[in-house]
Amino acid sequence: MNISSITSTTAAPATKVASPSTLDKNAFLKLLTAQLKYQDPSNPLDNNAFLAQMAQFSSLEQITNLSTVSQNNLLATQMTQAVQTIGKQVTWKELGGDVSHSGLVSGMTVVDGQIMLKVGDQTIPINQVTGVDQA
Image (cartoon, rainbow, N blue to C red):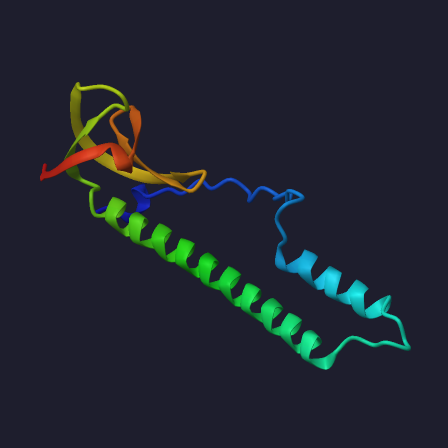
């Protein structure tokens, strides 16, 4: 296996714009800060409510971190599987078609988070591969 034949082209991460119906951890923190800033001094926020909100914030942050780690692990696993196909014969079907194609994998790349195999002059999404054989 020739490691120099492996390439990776990833696009810069797109900036997400939250829709009004979703709250990310930054929006949650801003709401909590505003609530503390503008609370009535004669009737401060209940300690139990404050602790509950902090626990929710902490849970949200940990779930977000876990999701990111899971996505990274999935991509790493898929990349490992793709690298193992280099130098092997693969068979694939085009989306929506019944015609099978085959060719020798010469490399792999990542495009917009999707693993692609280089087969001849084509780039094939790894999820279209239906078989792998020794060359």
